[in-house]
Length: 476
Image 1: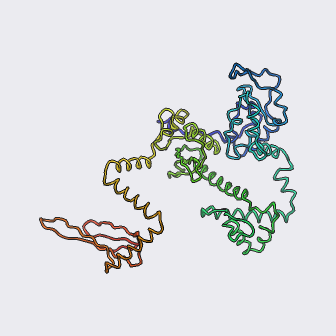
Image 2 (image 1 turned 135 degrees about the vertical axis):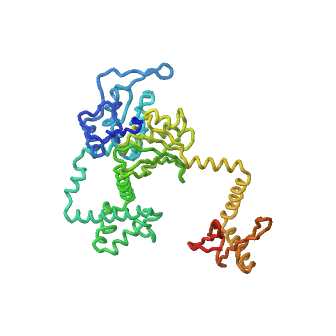
Image 3 (image 1 turned 180 degrees about the vertical axis):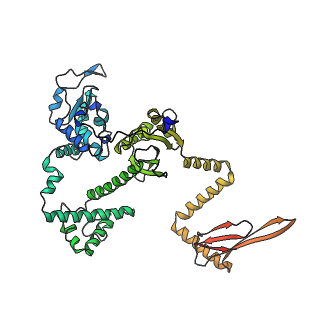
């Protein structure tokens, strides 16, 4: 039992010696698995080394359909389209992309063939490389530009900041503080940042811009440095800036969660569902006991997956755990639904994780178990499924049309007026000592009440019935 409860230290966040970084792309770890405070230094070290391009060696040949032999060619290193990023792994006989390895995860996509697995279809190599490079705004070109900016001292933040005047620095701090504080309040309230029309002539620019204008009206000093009074390229209100603000606060929340977790073990809860945009999203939650003994569940990410196979979900989980410096070895429990891709004993997600960590015991989610029990009971008992069927039919018939809802409310109002006393009365008879005693209860509602009623009835043993409505109780 001790081997299951033993807590292992996670070494993914330890600092490393830059001279020991592997050169061959086949031996490299994902860039997100390194310490967050050392990632830029690691990226800079790889960029200064340049892409790994072994020369003067005999490249192995691969047989394709029709006994055709193809192999990697050294001259591809110096082609203009591939210069500065194309790499070749002599250990795996595959091509890789250096800049995408360093920065593609920054855009939330680290599963490209030229990053994680390598490419070796020499028959279609140029078409695949052209597709990988893509258009001007492709992820590859963005990663390539970020690589160039990282080693360019003139593009460094501290260089740009030192060139500013004290007045520009003060205005920038004020402008940034207003945007970040406003973003914090909107996030706390779960309110939208952007709207449909944010143009200058719009009557409603929605929360972010409208509240920023309100802050400017209340503070003249702030009004002089925001929106139209700020430089056109430094207003701190663009959609990208708003997304960066939300991302920064999200990272702070994740940081706080990881501090609560520390080096402790945890359980993994995963479920996937299709969102309103018809994209399959996988929610990842960790469950752990904090330092004072309180069980906590914390949501750490929502990942878009292209398919729901076990291997795809396992890869996505590996990515998000590596991003936050967590290890599969620290997992002590798995909680999923009963679908075969999740709970399969041989090829399911639980089996793939158990192969790497035998201490990650699987527990079928109790909420899904309860749902299965309720469905099974409803199918076995005719009165129960008839009740649900009737409710479904009534809901579809009434709620689908505002006209029918108005007709129902008007019919109920006429019924109350017809009753005179405006009461709802029910009577039943129960046997007692060979005699019958009639008992009943009356619920009174104001005439302006409309369907459906907002009340519930509870029985107190040995006494009478209680009616609770709008927070007040009355005995019948």
